[in-house]
Image 1 (cartoon, helix red, strand yellow):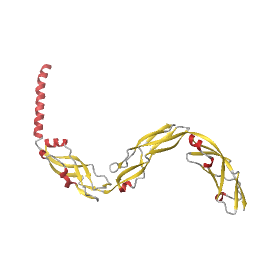
Image 2: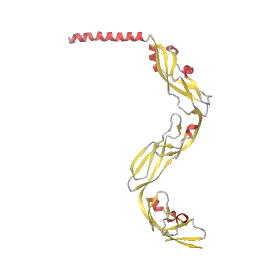
Image 3: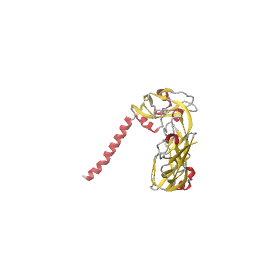
Image 4: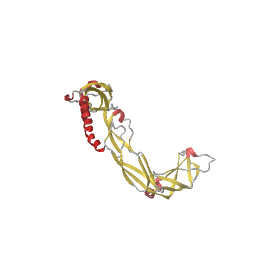
Length: 309
């Protein structure tokens, strides 16, 4: 039985192959109506003009032709090529009027019947402009306990973005891709990509920027002999704080705290707002440099000695 099966299998396979070939020859000689999807390409507009709304990327059309031609057409780069070198204002075009831009070889004898969708395309046109926008960081950089992030700086800190005027003018900044960095304790640099708000309509001159993170160890220090300033004193009065100076314990990045001077600290008592006849103690507003915090003032409260001139 096995020998008989092997002898019969070859004629059977041959019959199947011959049948398929004959079916394909007959089927591909028939005419068919068929729907195909083709890309839409906007070649150009008038100089310094661009779209401010995207157009459809593809169109669905119906064609008629022999089966073999419809098989072959898949190997051709068919597309609607829309070229408007003088167009400056928004308009609506009937896509069927541009069927001739579909370059189908005549030898295929394929007839384009109609555009199914979209029937028409709105071309919303605007001035093409280029503007500089600041770069902002997206995400977070977490610093290890005992350290502090002093600042971060981009290079460049702003980038050129081009596109339609009515969209570009609404953009406040260009964001980076989201950073998620943890347990950082030393200064470092990172190359980060930029996010194009609408890549279909806008172009960024830079795709990425460098960002430098400055990190320092947290330290404390006491600053001495800081004068107390009393402001908004009436012209007929002389006001003297008691005591006239204070000490301040501050905390911040190691290098910043090491460099800070007492005269960079400002302490203010606003006489006009704070003074009351029956009040004995007054707090002072303390203004300190950026990236430094104050922990404790010595003393915490002050008295005011008021005299008439």
